Image (cartoon, rainbow, N blue to C red; front, side, top):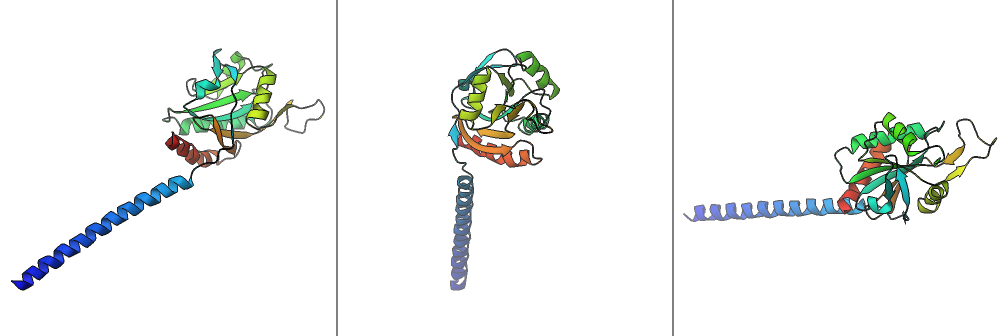
Length: 213
């Protein structure tokens, strides 16, 4: 009888140890997960200033229209003989990878507004399968766009002096960087918009911002 009592006591104690161990493991996993998320917090690199431009649809678009969205921006022009087609192709890859992310937008600004009218941008966007509700193509005055690129996004956008072009360059010099912007219009990352691993590099950061809300 005493042996049976001792056995039951040891059994209950053993089950308690196992239960406490499982609870401890669960707490540790949660702590590790939260630490991992914290480690992925992206720095704030600047803030996008207010702007008011025109979308390929002909509708006005301001910075306020992007508040609440995580978004990725680039600067291109439609008759670019250099990196723009590849950049737009990469943006198309992001569009596909983020097809279920309704709180994410893609935004392409033209650095040649004199030629890139809403109609021209619309035709260009269609060639790359850009979804109108998810991927914006914006134009406006040259002064507004160049100021936004330089002072807002801290990217190069300038006319290339005649006779100064290198092979593969066009009449406009511009950065090939993609810029990741959070829902509060804060710049959180820069990425090479021509590299093959762009999608793999940027997606984890997009997800980190979406978790921030």
